[in-house]
Image (cartoon, rainbow, N blue to C red; front, top):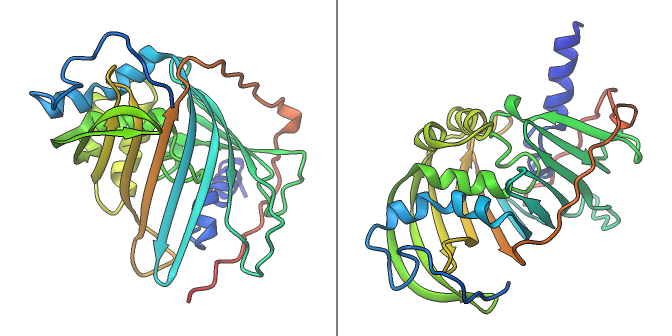
Length: 285
């Protein structure tokens, strides 16, 4: 086996905390109001497309994530929590997988480091020593790391909105006590990739090819600065191990903007380079 072949085998085995579970291989502000954020934007599409830029300007935030996946008779929910630096495009999350097929609840959270171009996972399981990290090159992932880690990268989630093709203002509501404007629409991953910045362009191109559909329905809730407070995407992820696609509903909550985010990458000696075992699928009902 060549080095490249070995690398691809490791990536394939590491690539999906989320999909493995299916056997699939806030604070209120009184500062300046963003244009169009109140009382329904005159141009909802333009408002939503600018959400990623508003997050980068905000600097950082705490985040909670939820990813619900359904395929056949199986439905699982994966939850995460952590902090994310939008300016540096990196974050640290704790991701909790559901119980294993045997019903054991003794499963430690996976620690994930989100960085430009790479995803690091610790407590990965599947034969990986507990003190070692698995490194995954996100450019090689067919979902652009929107699904693989069991938590959608918060900035990548907002970058998807750059591809918004249609959007409508739904109305005013609140998320965790913060007044927000609710928008609903559909984004196109191909268009999002064309408008994305930095490495997000590569990831979104991969997702446009790897997902069953490049069209992504969404609901987004923007505060009065135009920052995302809650974002829900619905993906259809192509799955070679099942007859149909996996339906994925990914929800990202953002709050406490401006918090300190510390992400220390593992040393080379702490990264696992051995074989990763294939975990069993969750039983279907």
